Length: 361
Image (cartoon, rainbow, N blue to C red; front, side, top):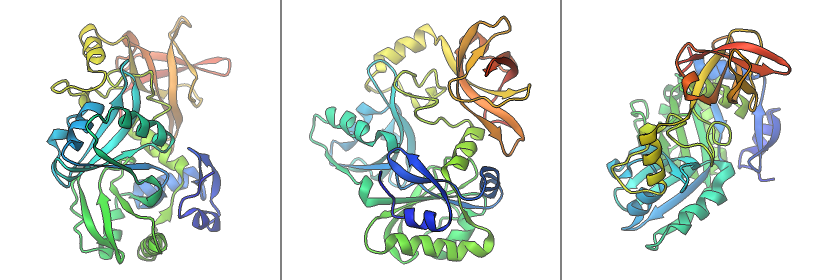
């Protein structure tokens, strides 16, 4: 099992540790509810150094990205980022990812899910016909996500870069907490605002940045946050988690990701997805809230009023912010309409739920 440069700090802080994507990661420090509310109301720090980062360089870098991803990366200018996915030939999703344009048409950073680093690298490399220079910098890159409404206010004194006014899906590069070549972006996965801080894993960079953040934020209530609260935060926003809500068998159209599927360009799986769009999808990812008491979990059956199987839960939790149980799952299209009554099979009981809009409220 791999460690991140911050593993010893998590253990020293008393974090509950567990394996995640091959890494020893902090799941929680105090309680999920407390950590969740810290991020929603103030600010918290997530160690997400397990994520994967690839650098693509050269005159054909954009062409490769355009062919392997579903969104239109040609719209990116330096300092802008984009959410996208890697479709396979059958319209499924190899992974969802972020694309950072470092230098227009020449240098890009792709950020992928930790569990898919090798899979994604091989998938992109297989389609790299024009010898684009590729570097897997995952092990050499640290990543901290500082999320919450007060995050940028806490961090601003640590840098001359203007991160207080950083627009959504943009980034800046410069000196942060005395460390050079730090990339700070606003592409958060919690819906609470904040930034992500990428920097080189060398020397005492990790210690310097971690210590500076907590020296600045500690007196203002900044806390370390585990992956469990990250999951409840993203679920309240209706954000997909790879391996739960999307995978190699789910298409971006089924997952409500048509907005990152641009048919104005050629990409892997385009024909399949065009046909699916033309013929219409048979199932759809929905959000739902429980009416009866019970918590939905990944893999639970979704049924109609007659007890007929109509789909499966992909994510579910007791929402700390809303005080009710919520979930997402795929159902047959006719059951995906807002306010439709559905039933979740929890143990041997069918519990009443209804389809709602996401983000949850």
